[in-house]
Length: 239
Ligand SMILES: Nc1ncnc2c1ncn2[C@@H]1O[C@H](COP(=O)(O)OP(=O)(O)O)[C@@H](O)[C@H]1O
Ligand SMILES: [Mg+2]
Image (cartoon, rainbow, N blue to C red; front, side, top):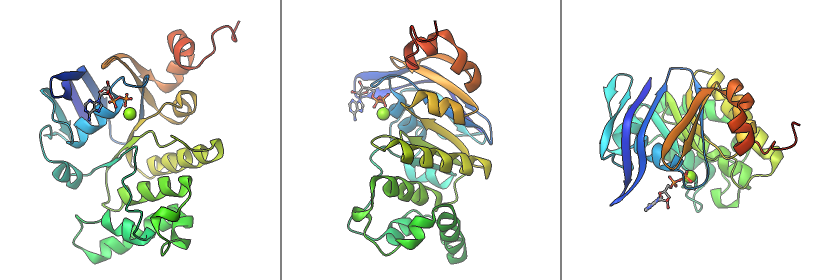
């Protein structure tokens, strides 16, 4: 469904992403892990059209999308939920959700999407008139996810949804992602929460210094000595 080949990207003269290739099939739930500054967000931004690659290709459902405007990529079915969430804090929950449907002309479809989001996140339904700025951290994540779903995407790019959340809320965000994946949405997730994210995904990529250094089934990555050593903090514990 999403195929990135030999991507090179960065900011001005600073190259951040080197020869990155990803291949994600329809229905998969894939995680991209790696240390801070490795370039994980840059990869998502490149797929979403916010950063233009200097070389390489991105194909979505067979069509080349690299270099297209973010809005067009969004319309093709890729929804990007950024780390900073980009909520309009002075607007209500409902208004924020409706903004996620700016590409949708059909009012019936918008109503269906609202129902879908409220069904997934009942807390948002209860708070639909509340200002987004007054929501708790967890509710804000739900709102950002909900807004990302309003355009009826086929694929979600989600950047560090667990950031800043208490463990209990991390779990509910991960549960929501799992539920969305089970409902048929393909997901590329970026996470620092390595163990938890490898437990809920099918497959993972490890990015270091802008290069993919390891990839495989999540279950295998959990058992991988290098991953255990560097990312799961089990050095000395297993022995
Ligand atoms: N807007 C930007 N302008 C310039 N450099 C950036 C920008 N965003 C990120 N970078 C740099 O690109 C590198 C990778 O950043 P990023 O993709 O955010 O990493 P990660 O998400 O893995 O933490 C870092 O060195 C960071 O400083
Ligand atoms: Mg990041």
